[in-house]
Picture (cartoon, rainbow, N blue to C red):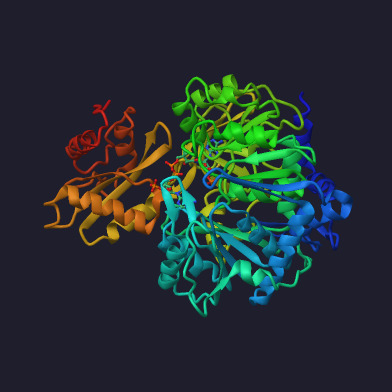
Length: 634
Ligand code: COA
Ligand code: AMP
């Protein structure tokens, strides 16, 4: 028996008692009536009847308790060579004034605000300002194209968009304002106004009647106070890729979210109030929402926001420089970032130039951690390396090694043990539990713990269809994996069309839609192939429309540009070739899994239902043209 076991056991036996105790640590404007509300099962709600304000708990509460002079936020920008700091009192002032400005722009409780911004502190102020007045923010990752932004605007129907004139990427300046213009032209929802933060690297020409100069307007803004909201009211919507072309708007509530994150900061990440915590991710992803913004601030940590890349800004030593400069006690990033550093600095020579003695632990998530990444990190950083597993939907770790409780013995290749409230099961196709050690679909017995998805934005039916219908009484994670004899969870791969490119979750279904939209394409199949740095890359096999197959090279180039325009540079879409036809079953289902195995050099077998086995030879040839070694069928 470990210290962890009784905690997890109690969380499942007595969820109400367990989470109510954690909730006592927060400031409630009105105490909850029910901790777990199951009156609408299988949709569960946490802390119904309770009222609180997430921004108050993340900022004002700490100022009121006398910690106004503690550093709350450090913005370290490797791409602009600047570093700025805000203490809790300064952050309160920034956020309160911006909240007042949002109000002046007509934003009220329950209204949506889309935030399309680079990694600058104003993005964090924007999120917290929304929370302060009960508005619902929806952050859209900057690496998405205008049409992706447009579809999110149409779904969320915001009153206001917060954006910046530009982002700074290593390759150059990204014209955020231009992308926003295009998105607004594509969207059917009319956005009443935009607040634009002008950056000196490339100021934008503001659109009169639509755009407001953020910094200028802020000068005359009246600070707004925190508004109590229901614990079950939405704090934010965050869109994530599913199997279809339409992103799913994950809705996070206020109460359960604050409670779960507060617990996780202490017990998973072992952070005491006052400690410096750094998550190297982007606020456009759930990791950034939970662990750049809300988790560390709720726990009164100093959070580091980093604008840069693990390599190339200026070199593979930048992560260690940031740890040294700010005294970070924990680092959390995606394995892809470490793979990029390791390949640039295999022997850790850059690392040795910095004093990272403040670092006590290192966390990885977002994709499967390969053993080489874990071992390199352990060897070079000399601190516990924790792989933990979660999703946009859950908002915090499903499985981890809870360093704040105890350090569980590490099982190579595993993402640890279930965190409180997560009852993790591995099921077969019929919904029966698989014996320990056997691979199956990972499902979570309902109810899920606080902080997990409340629903899908304006799509309750979709919530049920995507997550709850496959196995009644369970939430379907979309991942396959194994629970081993010791109860450790090993996450293997997705069971749907979702791929993970450099820690970014993308839909191959959406990419197929984009390709098939092109006039020169008759049919296309997209699947994920292994990549040494990015984990996976999308690969497309395209059947050109009649008469369009003549200039193959030009068409492939055009399709790469088309993908960049429609999905965005984040898709890293480069692997594309033309084929005469796609392999299908007799019922017409494209054999993506078989093609993926061929490309990845895995063992494969032509399914008995294949329409014409000869096509697989053609596919093998096309893949070898793209540089993939040919392998024969078993
Ligand atoms: N705004 C605009 N463009 C962006 C962007 C942003 N916020 N983020 C990425 N892009 C662009 C990049 O400039 C690049 O464009 P390019 O094709 O013109 O070069 C493209 O999108 C791909 O970017 P990225 O995925 O960052 O790849 P990279 O090759 O530039 O860097 C890594 C590779 C591994 C260094 C980088 O992916 C990384 O740091 N990943 C960490 C992922 C992460 O934080 N995941 C969150 C879950 S923890
Ligand atoms: P996202 O919603 O973008 O956070 O992506 C969630 C998905 O990333 C999960 O469903 C998994 O497929 C994958 N993932 C995240 N963390 C891990 C991990 N530690 N190990 C394996 N896969 C992971």
